[in-house]
Structure formats: C-alpha cells, structure tokens
Image (cartoon, rainbow, N blue to C red; front, side, top):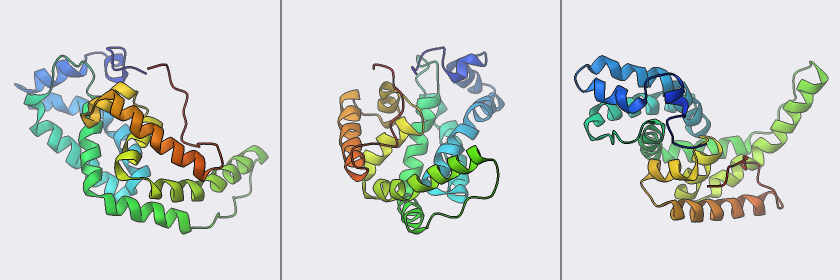
Length: 201
C-alpha cells in the first residue's frame, strides 16, 4: 500500500488534493472527503475507543480537517494519512477511554458462540480466543507504540503513511513498531496477531 495517486481517494476519480483545493472556494466540496473516508476512520476509531467515542472523534476530525484545509500540502494527492493523523490526535485526547475499553475487553470472558454453520462457529471461537489476550497486550503498550502498531495493522497505512500521519520520521515508525511487535510476540508466545502482510517499504 502506498500514498500514490492510485490510493483509495484517487481510485474514486478526483484526487483528494484537488478536492481540498476546490473546497477553498466551494466549502461544500469538502464533503467528498467525508464520503470517502468517514466510514474507514469510524471503523478504526471504534476498534480503539468504542462506538460512541469513535463517532465523536470522527466528527471532530473532519471539523479540524475542514478548519485546517488551507494548510494541507496540495502536493500530496491522497488525504487519508492526513486524516488519520488528525484522528490519532483526537484519539489521544481519549486515551483513558481507549485504555478502559481494552481493560474491559480483557476482563470479558469468551461468550458461547451462537449455533450455526460449523465454519462460522469455528471462526467465532477462534476470534474469541484471541480477543481477550489481544486486548490485554494492547493495553500494556505505551501509547505511542500502540498508535503506530494500530495505524499499520488496523488502519492499513504503510510505514511512510504512518510517518506522515504522525509527523515523525519513517525510522521512528519502524523503531516504535519493532518495539510494539516484540512486546506482542512476547505476550503471545512468539506470534503477533496484529501482523499483516506488508510490502517492502
């Protein structure tokens, strides 16, 4: 995954940077970015802080983005990393809600899966067996390590996009990610359930 014109925004037609530029004289154009990215941002935020806080965080993200749109770097065709960066700051304000959510998920026992197709039941059992220790391990990460890990694992950003979102060097992304994944592997006996297939970056 890269931040090129071939990204999610560009795939729908007009590049995000053009939409931002057009919104400077036609503010209603900014709603295109909301339509493109709100659901994606909400899914990510809900995993971290729960549905209610996620809704507020995404609304605040787009309000902040709209207010700051004149400072957007129009040389960056895709706004997704920028929006994830703003959302990350919003989630940072809700770090207590995130910590409480992970602690609550860690305490909740695995519920009995609903009766149904054998493969569906097996998937539910597998997911439930991972959820509790995953929440425990995530809660124990430093906030800056968790932020990088989840932007890449759940937000599906590349290292370069995560660096852009967090306004840090790519090397810092790599070192934080390495530390986070080392801790996750230790918690899971050598495996890391957050690992996703990544391109060479």
